[in-house]
Image (cartoon, rainbow, N blue to C red; front, top):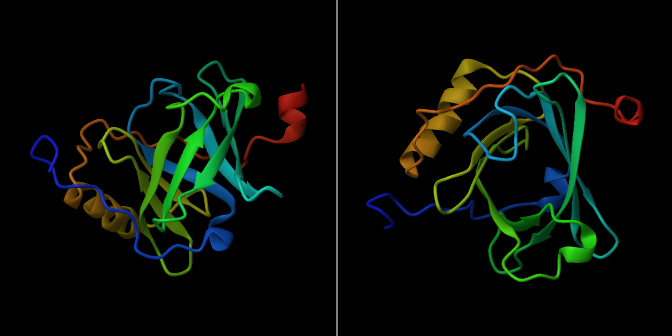
Length: 172
């Protein structure tokens, strides 16, 4: 137990190959590095030749401009559903303690909805393969977050138009 909150637990089984691809952000807890009014937020995961995962986060920022952050995730070989993620420039990724925990807390059998969090209860995301989900699906995933000790008082639901930020938009 940490601060009288339950321990955060990752899923016991996880198929990284099925997790790869495009995800829409349905909701999140506030992040210092993401505009609160950002919209059309997506994350795309792809496997690199070295076994690491490329993380391509995109959104329309609060000024209405397309934005992108490229990161890298390293699967935890000893724990299913756990990754270590960094968004530092590639030349600085060797620096110790610059990777963040990224744990799959709940994922459905079809890999269509995923709840991701950090073991310190500070970061939480609800992701889906589609830009909108049924309220009962959101409720089920958020109930798991609460069960694991997350405080959802500041939960943010970004606007999703269903149109992810494209390479052309980033190049403009």
